[in-house]
Amino acid sequence: MPNFQNYDVLIIGSGGAGLTLALKLAEHSMRIAVLSKFALTAGSTYYAQGGISAVFGADDSIESHIEDTLDAGAGLCDPEIVRLTVTHGKSSIDWLREQGVVFTQEQTPSGESKLHLNREGGHSHRRIVHTADATGKAVSLSLIERAREHANIELFEHHNVVELITSSREAKKRILGAYVLDSTKQQVRTIAARVVVLATGGASKAYLYSTNPQSATGDGIALAWRAGCRVSNMEFMQFHPTCLYHPHAHSFLISEAVRGEGGKLILPDGSPFMQNFDPREELAPRDIVARAIDHEMKKRGIDCVYLDISHKSEQFIREHFPTIYQQCLEFDIDITKQPIPVVPAAHYTCGGVLTDSYARTDIANLYAIGEVACTGLHGANRMASNSLLECLVFAERASEDILQNLLGISPPPPIPDWDESKVGDSDEEVVVSHNWDELRRFMWDYVGIVRTDKRLSRAMNRVELLKKEIAEYYSNFRVTSDLLELRNLVIVAELIIRCAQQRKESRGLHYTLDYPETDNSKPAQNTVLTPCPTERR
Image (cartoon, rainbow, N blue to C red):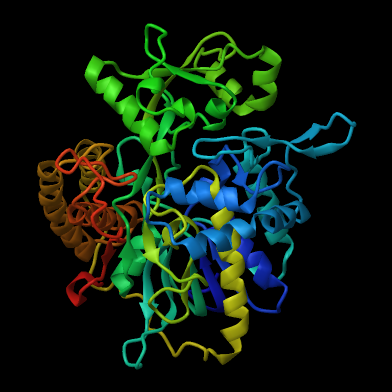
């Protein structure tokens, strides 16, 4: 790849959202570059277990799916966006099947085959289309295979964006491209594009414990913020209730489908407890289940609780949860005979870069799709398996808008090369690793499942100190992928804290001991932050 490249569309991120958009645009004779920070399979899509929500059951309906989503979102979902997304469920699944994704089937009494549908927390019906317990892997591999076949799509692994490039002299700021670190050569390249799309995923690695892969460092949110985009609802970080608890297990999620198929949460003595927190018990929305587990762990001083599916037959468990079964066996846990030790862990970023119904941001020709965006679908709490559906629907929406407007977008003007003339190689990489660990630990302790004003204030004080250290380090040394992630993470941490400080109530995923009740005295409001000039670049 030369040091300067020019494309019609630059897509930053190779998960379900980014690759779906690339494939939909590739049929229209345009040059598309897709960047992946690590390997193409390193994003969150590949690791998604549960599935994709869509209405297929005869007893289900679009209205029911909408109602469930609105209920989970605790008053902050945009009803029009929810309806738009849900009504595209079946067509999105049909498109994936055309791309080669094979979903789990079941036999009807008449001997016909149909999609097997799981049920997960917050859903009133079975509507989760899945590929056993490795849906994301099936989707990711199929889309990667299709993308490799297209001459119009160029895929670049191990390319991490340093900064977005925007115009500064035009009446309305527009995107021009990005400076990109080729990690294999440790060289910063310039990529110009008429359209840039952020599909970088979420920011759960801001926390000490996370179900997400290493790539989820909020890069797109931080890039957009520095470029001048608004962000919204960053206080709503979803903690998945059930991450495998084992000293040698890293970020392994126990799918919500385990509870959907009858798995019971129990204490070390074997007694259930969810009935004390919600009449839906294990099928309550994730925020309720995560807080219940957190409460029991703190109350009893225990390291974890347990999720028990062993009352089901061995054949059922191995057929429905082959990945979980095999992974747990590697840690000497036979889930057909014993319960699984679990703890909550940061899982999904419900807020993000503020977009409209076509995925457009505040900067002309800059789009955001997938977990990096705040579309209005999730509100204060994402309902299980709506996320992959959102990726598919908003990739389609962005493709429609790009195709309609691309011919009217002029090519970017000449862009100066990245300047490294005044920096040197770092002689203290320990600064990066130390700050990374400190940030994730205080975010877990102070800005986690349960918050207080005092905890948030303490976290903000530490963020301010880290920002100064990282800014000084960044200005003196050549960029590395680890440094870029740390620089982005500290911005995301600040945005989460600032949003949390503004919300003087408990709602959805944001629970504070200082304001334990939801404020119903006025209409629910989204938290929106606008960057001032000093917070950019």
